View 1 (cartoon, rainbow, N blue to C red):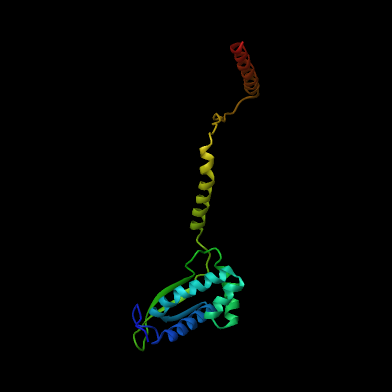
View 2: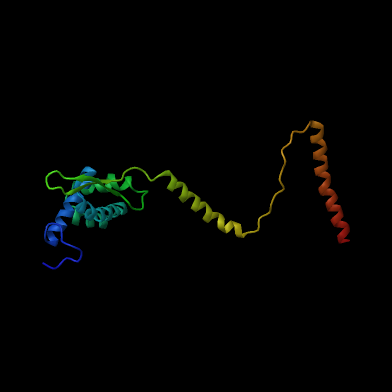
Length: 184
């Protein structure tokens, strides 16, 4: 057996470790949450997240790659049809490890690893929308913008409204006449 690069292997050999992790991932996808030791939970988390990423792709090649690890076709079907659509908006972080204390018999540190099924927080969604709006607005800012005069909202009597309309229609005519005299 080759010397492991990062500490001892789970179960002794590399083949046994792969089997342990595959069984943990299968149980996680089947039940949604499992209780195991902290070490096993930390080791199965990247494997489970990678399998969920394959399931999000959803094509035949991804299904076959998942089937090399998870041997139960029913669990793979559940992964592709139920779990992957539930986490479609997430870019990662599909699992959560929570430490729960030590086991009674051998005092081993225990943890619960579970699938994160709640939707992405609304705050993150608002931030993403704001970033998209900022990207769309950035090219528009480069173009010259014409500022419109501020319109004051005041309550006018009907007589004042008529006088204001007459003044507005006469002002452009007076400006046009002034421009014609300058050109001549």
